[in-house]
Length: 118
Image 1 (cartoon, helix red, strand yellow):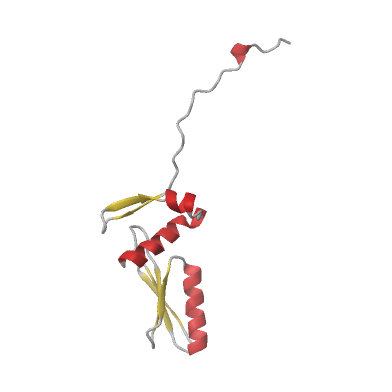
Image 2 (cartoon, one colour):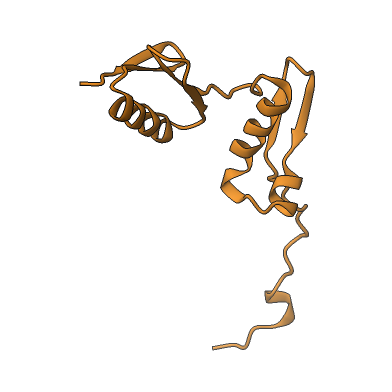
């Protein structure tokens, strides 16, 4: 059995750094943002896109591209909310229906469901 020489161990070629910073665009604003600030400064991790979308809506009145909120609205009173995931939307609807005995509509994309007060 022979001993390996320096020629047997080749240094792999250098690779370019991977930039996997998520980006968000908004055609209404005509802008695109990378979420380096949300990742590095705010340390939001997996929640960075959701937090950016909520902040964008808060400041502009609309959501960025490819973000469709779950909209819950009471069918009897003016209460309602918007959520970016289904779980909190359904929880809000069930809680409101239970406490007020009002039916609540849940809308997302092209579908609508009613949470009954009964």
